Length: 197
Image (cartoon, rainbow, N blue to C red):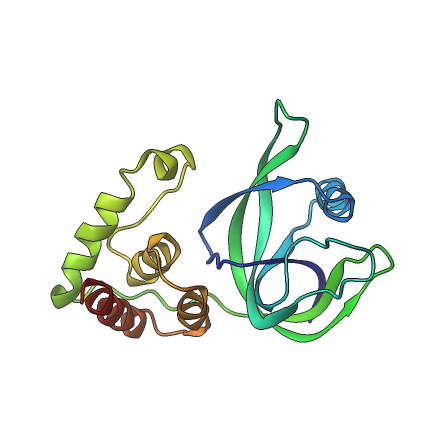
């Protein structure tokens, strides 16, 4: 068990995934400062209900999923608008056992860090998903993120496709909670058929 701060968002990031975040709320500026000082990370977790930004002091923290990804800050930059931009990379998935709110209105959680998924090769009948991912990674925004992908790994192909495809957040959360990478590819294939229909 570990105690970590949570950063609730309306999206999902997997281990190995990269994400750029603009930090402007004081509570998260403090969290980022503490994470960098102590060389630790924080948990990115999907919002089930509520908002990622508190619009007034009495607003309740959002209701969040029970599974997220522990991430570390890999780069940061002060923007011309004065805001802090950080790049984070997912390391390992976790399950939330208990969560609470700090005096600074940050969400903290007792979490169980989960083992990395067992690597598996891409089944031959799913190679078209690799082709799709190769096309998506040519997009300028993806190239600029510095994302590296092992196109022979079912774990990585499934994770990166889930992050990049324009699917609903609830579907992405379901994919995150799965621990069978080949089954995830099958579900992604079904989702693509639904999107094309």
